[in-house]
Image 1: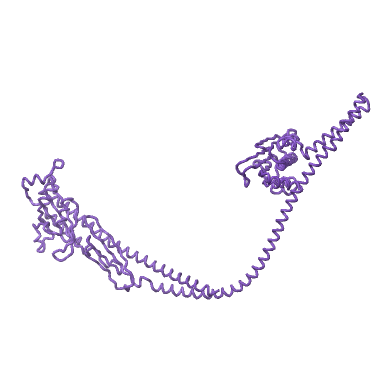
Image 2: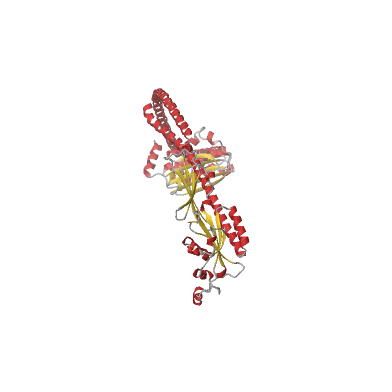
Length: 583
């Protein structure tokens, strides 16, 4: 058994080992992803904060200038303080619209009335000249910028146009400053708020930002991390790399990457952060421990399988022996079960035969009582009447004796007639089931026992064969007899319906449904129903003989309920049933 199991066990062992390696690497990968996420969050937060600061500085600088454009002392003091606090700011600048008057013809074409006011933006765009009026720091390296028009610089010309049109912070494309640094300009156009907006009091404030100052210090990033600032045109503007002193690099290991975009406050950049994976990140000692543990477990498993093989051989021999004995036992059980089933069928057949013989004997005895004893009693009464006619005197001894004989014969006839009706009601043969049931109800005299009878008969109950008639009559007769003897009931209900459609239980189509219930004292149905006496057993067997179901159970509130459902078979089946009952 070991050889067939060996490939499967080996495959399972390899799968488990690979799974454990995978889970370990996945755990390390999740940790490395978290480290990359931390680096990304740190870099993004730093750059985002600095771009926000840049926009706030520009807004504050613009607000200060618009309040008093001529107060250069205050403006320069603010600019110096902000440059000292925020090293990424290279310089502050102010441009002012030059005082030019367009030709009369151009004035009409350039000014379009909007709610009665000229469109200053279109005028400025058509006749713009924005020399620099303020630069901070103002030194030998920047003094040449004073009075220059930045629109002459192709790097910022388009950006200045956007700033004049929208009056929102707008950043230029990155360019190289005079000292070789990678920078960009952030512009904001505004009007002197102390004067009415016109072409002569339009200003543009700007700050020059050093791109290298946006990225945070690399020492704060994890080992193997690198951050890059990329322009909208996918040009790397600046980058920072953390030291790799303790990182054991491996070319076959992947590099984790993450990318974020900053497009706020008029400034647009892409941040590209990468994270190298070193051998120490894979936790090789743990992987080695997993491998050794897996090999140890595999060895123990093989030893266990060898022991299991020896035990399995012994168990197999014992199992074969037990299997053989079990098969013999099952065969004996099957034979015994078949014998019991055959015996049950035979007992039921004998029960049906007893009922058929009993019914036949009752019919014969009733006929004998009617033919023999009835005729004899009639002859006796006739002779007694002749004697009374011969001796009409009432005081005559012969007359009195004849009268007594006539009375006794009449009493014997009444008793005999009652026995005949009990044994075989003549109405069942002469008039049908309904009249026989009415006669049975009358003979039980429920009124004399203070019992109120409730009846409900439906359907073609007189159009059935003798088998159904005698079965229903005997069920009713036996049930009424038990109620009068034992129930002590106040109400008795009998419902007999013949239904042609629907279904009740397993019986559908043309069927009989008999319900007899009372509100008497009842009895323990589960214990006593078919354990004592022959009455209920006979009722059940009569119903089963016709292929029906018989149920006895406690009534809803009190008393007992008997339910019988009998299918109405076709003529062939009915004939077979009749023959079985008549054997």
